[in-house]
Image 1 (cartoon, rainbow, N blue to C red):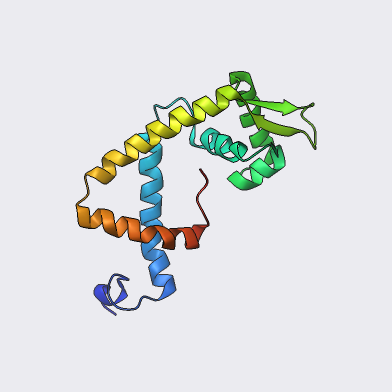
Image 2 (cartoon, one colour):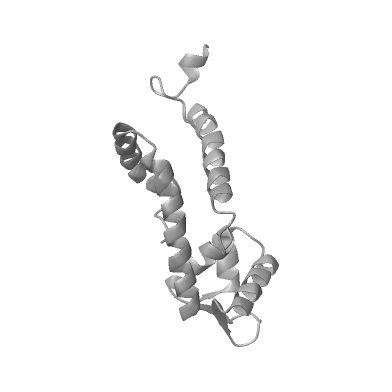
Length: 151
């Protein structure tokens, strides 16, 4: 089978071929987003934790599951965020304690989100109007593939 026949941009793709075609592109997007945001005051994981906590308090275990890390790693992340004043913990660091975003954490989240959106907007602005429309049309498909976005 020729490359064009397996290229999912042509014809009806096999799901495995499409997945193999998508995987390196999603990896590239992830790498670019991390590289673009390296200089920001909040790591990708810290930003995700702040986003999750905007919906309400969570336990460390819930945060760890949501971010795909082990609870001890999330405990370290949360402890650092407590030191920075971005979150608080109700009670001692034991099972059942809840982590909650602070007013400062809300501000940090808003500032970093604004900066990250501006960085991504610069990339989107470099696209043609047709490419921007195509990208917008793909959003519902991405939501079905990965679930609804977190704020």
